Structures are given as structure tokens and as C-alpha cells.
Image (tube, rainbow, N blue to C red):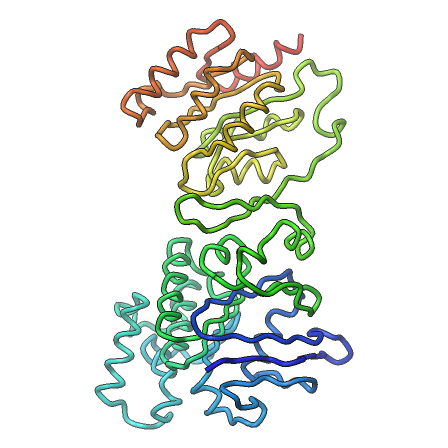
Length: 418
């Protein structure tokens, strides 16, 4: 049961929102629609399911023009989860999920044992069984979102359209939900999802639609579509596109905006460039106090707290995919950076096999190094003693200073300016 739109254009009053869009969606793929705010993503989804009627072009579902189908017939073929759903009456969770069955049994028909079984299975799928008698309006935003998605699944339609369904979900449930969508694909359901998180899309969607200003900029397999050039065109931001060596999925890292030198540090400073080896939030008190300098950070994983903070501070970051070991490319980038800095700060980070390379590379440097040591290395070593050996060798070198408080750390930096 393919769904396609042919030469669709749509206007709100005189404003053109969709401009001559032609797309075809078939079984076996999870489709992600990406684009900046105002690009026409939600409007496209509403046209696909018939909520909005386009004067120009047509939407065809299983060879039928959607304009000629009644609401009940459309609902049997297409289930929709909109971006926001308001429910005025405080129905229970079970009642709302059961509403998805109305297209099959009628609004006032008696619920059969088979229908109860279907609803029970869906409640269990979404971990809602314990909440089934709770009022919808007493739930958290994330729980409400799960209920609305469960209602759509209860329709058992062959086409599922979702508008940013992961927005209110916790990270762990975002992953679980996207994996569940993959299972629906295997069951023959066509799934089309608007998603704002590019990295989540590249991990789970195998075909991508890129929209900008109501036009399709690109459509195809994610490896072909998620490119530096396309994302620059769509979001007006430069990115690095990398591949996770474990999952084989691609992910993106935004480049930082480079500020003029005069904005990054005082030209009279003797120290201009500082590199911080961070991770796990260990540098959270250090990084904000270095914004007078040209700062680089890494190697850290993309989801790490220090990565997020460094990103907000517009520091240069060497990063790896979440939960991945350090690659040769990142190692070489770190070595190059360390050759050109005036000072290196090693935060009080734990060491495991995945980030041990940071310590090994640091041990090879002859630059001035400060070890910020809040806890003994033995307490932070999860490498069966390998990190401790390297760290203690580093600590004994003449170019290395150790301190255990922030005041002394920044006093040392000031003393290097004298």
C-alpha cells in the first residue's frame, strides 16, 4: 500500500508553504522528514493524511485519490500522531487507546474479547498497563505522548504518520520508541516521521526527506542525503559527518563558529591557546573561566556533559560518537592541537579503555601541563592499572604541575602571564 504525492502545492492564504512536491513512500523503509522551522514539514504531513486539502496536485493512497475517500476509510489506512494533542475530557489511558479501535468496531459498539486483547497488547508494548486507569490529564507530558502514540498504533493502519513524536520523551524512551518503529516496518507498515534531532534520524531512518522553504532539497538513502553540503544548505551550519564504527550509522557534529582572534583572547596575553582534556562533567568548573583564551576541548563523546558545555561556550571540540573508543583520526587531531597550545589542563576524569588514548597522547607532550587532581588516579582508573602507570609517569615530569583546587589552578595560569 504505497502512498505518494504528485506535484503538491499548498498555500495559507497567499503564502506558499509547499511548492510542487512529488514523493513516493513504500514498504520496508522508515522515512524521516527533516528541515528547519517553517520549512513545511507539518503541512506536508497534514496534506498526506487529508487533514489539509491541496488545490494543486494529488495524494494517492493504494491507488485511490485521498480527496475522494471518506474520513473512516482514510483512518483505516492512515494513523496520525500530531505534534500536540489536546483532550478536554479526562478520559482514562485505556479509554484513549481504545479510541484507536473505533474505525474497526464503531464508536458505540460493545468491546469484544478480541478487541480487549488488542488494547491490552498495545498497553503492554508501551509500558502503560499500570497507568491504564489513570486520567490522561494527570499524566506527565512524556506519558501523555506515549498514550497518543499507542492510540495511533491501535488503529492498525498500514501507514503511520508522526509529527515529532519523540519531543517529550526521555532519551532512553526515544531510543526504545525508534527501535519499535523499526519493528513496525518489518511488519509491513509504512512509517513517515517528522523529527528534529538529526542524529536520531540518521541512526534509525533509512530514507530522508530534506525540506527547505516548502521545497524538497533532497530525498533518498540517509548516507547519500545527510552530507555536509546538504546540511549547510538546509540549516546554514557547517558540520562534520562521521560514521559510528560499532553501529555503522552516521552522525553529525556541528562546527563551532570561529570568533576573530581579538574576541577570543587579549593579544597581550603570553598564554593564548589552552587545551582541556575533559569528560563526564569533570571540567564544568574550569571551562567557563577560560573564555578569554583560545580554548580547545577533547577528546570527548558527543553526549558528554563537558561536550555540551564546551559547545555552548563556542570552544573547538574533538569528539567521538557516543560510547565509542577514540579513533585514529581523533588521535591525530589531538596530537596536532597539542603541538600548538601554550598550556594543557587535564581535568579530574576517570579513565577507561575508551578514553585511555587521551592520557597516552598527553604523556608524549613536552608542553606545560596542569593535572587537576581532586581524587587519586587509583580511584579513577578502570583499566586494571594501565592508566595509573601512565599518569604517575606523567606526574613525575618537569613540565607537569599538579593541583587539587581551582584557586591554585587559575593562580598558576596567571603566573604564566608574568
